[in-house]
Length: 377
Image (tube, rainbow, N blue to C red; front, top):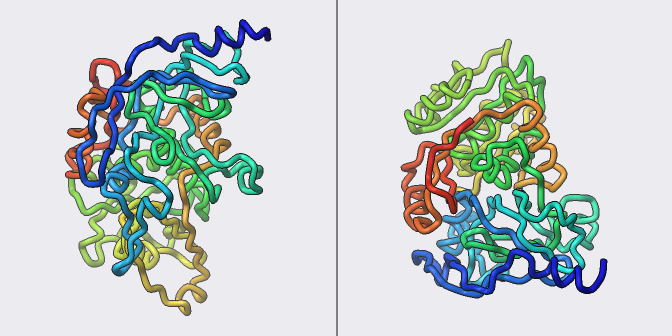
């Protein structure tokens, strides 16, 4: 490639104009619309024009600036080296509009839509070399340490973080970068026979809904859903859950398991002391509890009980690039169905965050540059 070709690719699609960026300028404040120059790629970087960006519950933790880790202890964003202003948004689907001179991009890819893998590691440590960039100790995730998708355009450091979404509903595909990937990676950690034993899902918000659809596509025939909200339990049955119960009702979950169909694994998308202990208590011997949700807190577990029941307690944090590729292949090959998804314009990002915080959405909210509409299968 000639130097002239490199310069052409570097600037292709990036207009010399200001773009809108919705930024967290201080914790516990509404995001502010800031105008700034559109980005220009350098080296191996590429520029994505944001078309859809999912609103994730993690964004609520980021807005308040900390996670509850139990007792009076808090894990703050400052502990992770993250300080405002921050451009949130990590479930990003958009159009590739420009590539830096060193980016290995086929010119035919310019103008195509891609899903962005946001959990970017250092790329050089042993963990990254093993393919698990999401577990890198120096992770620099898009939407947290790096500017995210709550803006019109963003820089992605290398095209290897772009995934083809041809043949997949673009609004739903945006959510696969976090909720779908997180659910898929967690299910892959579960024990038991999908055909004969039960999988339990604790919490049926966006993550739980994604998990149900993915688990069904992976062959789980008996899925039990626990949620304190009756509306969500109704949605679970509509989406194909075998049984539902209210975990706040003592003994309500016992009818969901039987010696013939024991609960082999529990996915906890709440992540509170109560949800964890409830899930662990219902597992069969040799079962697996997978902690995913970040509600926060701490728990006490009987070591004797843990040993005698031979339980596994596993934490699961998002997923690897390989797992995202596997999830997209699953979506294309078998179809995952469409969870409850609604779209809102990017300009209403603060209203979207408020609705998520209040639990006013039936499922996922996706911000879009297009006219808002319901997701279609």
